[in-house]
Length: 118
Image 1 (cartoon, rainbow, N blue to C red):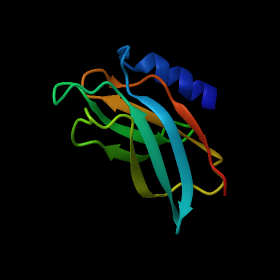
Image 2: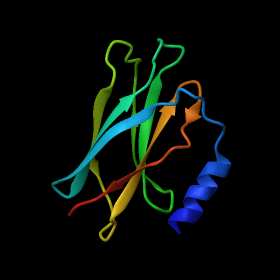
Image 3: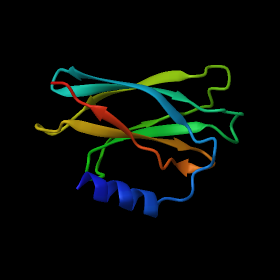
Image 4: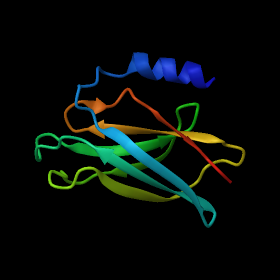
């Protein structure tokens, strides 16, 4: 099922630019009833016209579990880490995927697999 989702995702997205936001690190940890996801992103932000503007957490079927909007460019802060709190991940889920977004190129084709340790 995961391979099918990844193939459909690759076919259904617009071509990514060479400078798509890159996930450098992801940390997932239990936080109360949910999860906290910390994502470190690197992107050659140039200002308001071109910057990393978000990332999302997906399950293996491609369902969005969480979205972190990035509200401004991070020209002088590279790489940078932002968190998303209280993500509800269904019991039994062993992995999620993080995908980044750029204000010019849209969603990246690259998915970063994150193993969940309960």
